[in-house]
Length: 191
Image 1: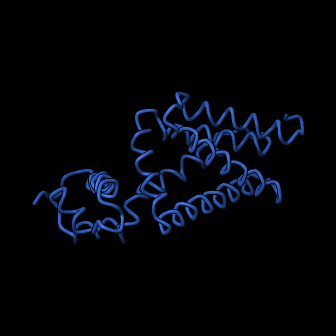
Image 2: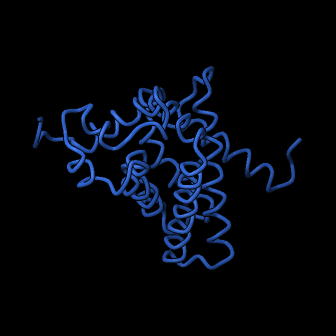
């Protein structure tokens, strides 16, 4: 058995994604995932509480990217400008070379109700985290919550657009375009 190699969680995640995509989420066991990369089921469970969580590896990095963007925004920035900074920071996690991986992951998630719920929970938690960070910067509610929820909505729409087969724009460009559209809608000047 292969043991103590660096990157074990990432190898397990990649193996799981491939197995879920070819065999189906429900038909794949944690043991099969571990064995496909030469590890034991016990090793799998050292890294993940269950097979669902293997698809959500990196949640802390994901959240931190948004928080780094909130922190990087200028002190006097408006709430939506802070959210724009957060989205710009998070866009770095979605380079074009990850698009195919993200498409496969999203397809697996869309095919399973429990995974869709886990993904929705991830985004709800992200919105709460951003709202807390905005409040820590002195932005009161409801502005903090509105800005955070709007930012997560923009992220979700951008992610869906970025995954389209014919989409060529970068993730960052898509989020910038969508934020501009949101501001147009908010001003009431949209078509």
